[in-house]
Length: 119
Image (cartoon, rainbow, N blue to C red; front, side):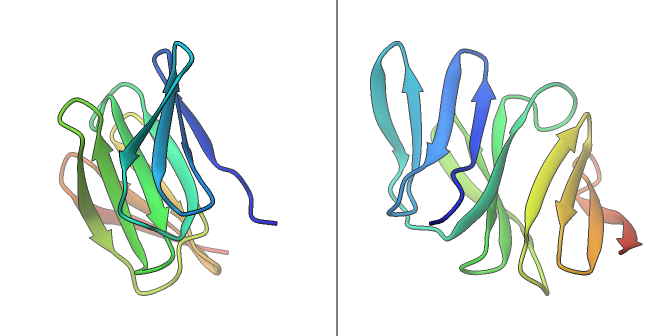
Protein backbone atom coordinates (compact mmCIF):
# COMPACT_ATOMS: atom_id res chain seq x y z
CA UNK A 1 0.00 0.00 0.00
CA UNK A 2 1.20 3.50 -0.87
CA UNK A 3 1.87 6.07 1.85
CA UNK A 4 -0.69 8.82 2.29
CA UNK A 5 0.97 12.23 2.34
CA UNK A 6 -0.96 15.00 4.02
CA UNK A 7 -0.40 18.71 4.56
CA UNK A 8 -2.22 21.24 6.71
CA UNK A 9 -2.51 24.78 5.43
CA UNK A 10 -4.51 26.98 7.73
CA UNK A 11 -7.67 25.04 8.49
CA UNK A 12 -7.53 23.01 5.27
CA UNK A 13 -6.24 19.44 5.03
CA UNK A 14 -4.66 18.54 1.67
CA UNK A 15 -4.00 14.97 0.52
CA UNK A 16 -3.62 12.91 -2.65
CA UNK A 17 -6.21 10.22 -3.36
CA UNK A 18 -5.52 6.77 -4.83
CA UNK A 19 -6.08 8.14 -8.35
CA UNK A 20 -3.26 10.64 -7.81
CA UNK A 21 -5.45 13.76 -7.56
CA UNK A 22 -4.88 16.56 -5.08
CA UNK A 23 -7.85 16.95 -2.69
CA UNK A 24 -8.74 19.28 0.14
CA UNK A 25 -10.98 18.79 3.16
CA UNK A 26 -12.44 21.73 5.06
CA UNK A 27 -15.54 22.12 7.21
CA UNK A 28 -16.71 18.61 6.30
CA UNK A 29 -16.48 19.24 2.55
CA UNK A 30 -14.21 17.26 0.25
CA UNK A 31 -12.97 19.04 -2.92
CA UNK A 32 -10.88 17.71 -5.79
CA UNK A 33 -8.45 20.59 -6.25
CA UNK A 34 -6.53 19.23 -9.21
CA UNK A 35 -7.73 16.40 -11.41
CA UNK A 36 -4.35 15.93 -13.16
CA UNK A 37 -3.22 12.43 -12.10
CA UNK A 38 0.20 12.38 -10.46
CA UNK A 39 2.42 9.77 -8.82
CA UNK A 40 2.86 11.75 -5.61
CA UNK A 41 5.49 10.60 -3.16
CA UNK A 42 5.15 13.55 -0.76
CA UNK A 43 3.48 16.92 -0.25
CA UNK A 44 4.20 19.76 2.13
CA UNK A 45 2.59 23.06 3.03
CA UNK A 46 4.26 26.39 2.45
CA UNK A 47 3.80 28.30 5.68
CA UNK A 48 5.69 31.57 6.00
CA UNK A 49 8.51 32.95 3.88
CA UNK A 50 8.64 32.42 0.13
CA UNK A 51 5.92 30.17 -1.24
CA UNK A 52 3.61 31.07 1.63
CA UNK A 53 0.18 29.46 1.43
CA UNK A 54 1.15 27.00 -1.32
CA UNK A 55 1.21 23.21 -1.48
CA UNK A 56 4.45 21.69 -2.79
CA UNK A 57 4.21 18.29 -4.49
CA UNK A 58 6.93 15.72 -5.30
CA UNK A 59 5.72 13.92 -8.44
CA UNK A 60 7.62 10.73 -9.32
CA UNK A 61 5.66 10.27 -12.56
CA UNK A 62 7.58 13.01 -14.37
CA UNK A 63 10.32 13.60 -11.75
CA UNK A 64 9.19 17.13 -10.91
CA UNK A 65 8.42 19.35 -7.99
CA UNK A 66 5.08 21.07 -8.52
CA UNK A 67 3.41 23.88 -6.64
CA UNK A 68 -0.33 24.32 -6.15
CA UNK A 69 -1.77 27.75 -5.39
CA UNK A 70 -5.06 27.28 -3.50
CA UNK A 71 -6.12 30.89 -4.11
CA UNK A 72 -6.29 30.60 -7.91
CA UNK A 73 -6.34 26.76 -8.00
CA UNK A 74 -3.38 26.66 -10.38
CA UNK A 75 -0.83 23.82 -10.55
CA UNK A 76 2.60 24.67 -11.98
CA UNK A 77 5.92 22.86 -12.37
CA UNK A 78 8.56 24.44 -10.17
CA UNK A 79 11.54 22.18 -10.89
CA UNK A 80 12.42 19.28 -13.21
CA UNK A 81 14.68 16.74 -11.50
CA UNK A 82 17.27 14.27 -12.81
CA UNK A 83 16.28 11.69 -10.16
CA UNK A 84 13.04 10.50 -8.59
CA UNK A 85 11.98 12.67 -5.63
CA UNK A 86 11.45 10.86 -2.32
CA UNK A 87 10.43 13.56 0.18
CA UNK A 88 9.85 17.28 0.74
CA UNK A 89 10.13 19.80 3.55
CA UNK A 90 9.95 23.61 3.59
CA UNK A 91 11.28 26.27 5.93
CA UNK A 92 10.99 29.98 5.05
CA UNK A 93 12.51 30.32 1.54
CA UNK A 94 14.15 26.89 1.32
CA UNK A 95 12.53 23.75 -0.05
CA UNK A 96 14.43 20.57 0.88
CA UNK A 97 14.01 17.80 -1.70
CA UNK A 98 15.04 14.30 -0.66
CA UNK A 99 16.41 12.09 -3.42
CA UNK A 100 17.79 8.57 -3.13
CA UNK A 101 21.43 9.62 -2.68
CA UNK A 102 21.26 13.34 -1.93
CA UNK A 103 19.22 16.24 -0.63
CA UNK A 104 18.70 19.35 -2.74
CA UNK A 105 18.18 22.69 -1.03
CA UNK A 106 16.12 24.79 -3.44
CA UNK A 107 15.96 28.55 -2.93
CA UNK A 108 12.36 29.65 -3.50
CA UNK A 109 13.36 33.31 -3.70
CA UNK A 110 16.00 32.82 -6.39
CA UNK A 111 14.33 29.72 -7.92
CA UNK A 112 17.54 27.70 -8.04
CA UNK A 113 19.26 24.81 -6.28
CA UNK A 114 21.58 26.49 -3.79
CA UNK A 115 23.12 23.39 -2.22
CA UNK A 116 23.42 19.62 -2.67
CA UNK A 117 24.01 17.38 0.32
CA UNK A 118 25.33 13.88 -0.47
CA UNK A 119 24.06 11.03 1.69
